[in-house]
Length: 112
Length: 115
Image (cartoon, rainbow over all chains, first blue to last red; front, side, top):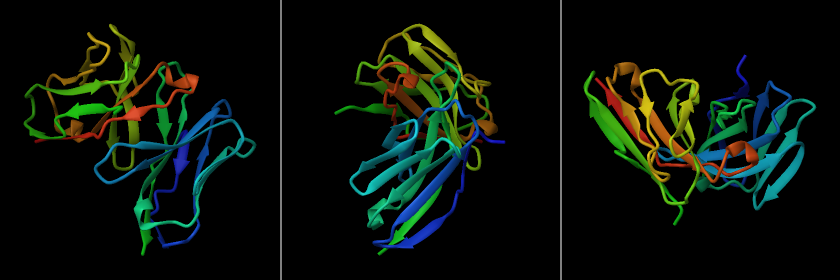
């Protein structure tokens, strides 16, 4: 079983739609959770960073962590064509390497 | 501007020809790391460095070497590249150990093809 699972999609939505992206993780010791956005041929860029359970909002983006079900979500409101990218969920591993454990990424296309 | 800079961005090389991918950050970060990204496998850590002269293996270190002689630079060395090292490589850095809640910044990526 992968430590972080993410549906690769692709996901296609019309402009203005609410997008929900999800990941599950296996280790209840994980505490920090991140969402990265990766445009084609670019490096991952940090979108949201959350600690433990709860919600965090930043503009059109809301990150949600439910530790009881080991489920993390990213919601995008009023989606725009510029949001078309691959979204990667990630968490810190429990080792001391500092590595991030990534999901496979979900490819999102927002059609005008 | 805060940056992690990798070179080359694109490279096609032949099996066995040694190559180095350079990585430099201008943020005075202590922690640096290399990842490779492959379809279906996602991003996996190759090597990491906590500080100058302190490096250690990640999950997929075979076939790679690194060095950290200066704080800003963390080159990835492929002594004898093989086709299974064809991948997209990312260098990353953070102020200190990432599990302290520090943001990790990624470079733009280096596309490497080994034929």
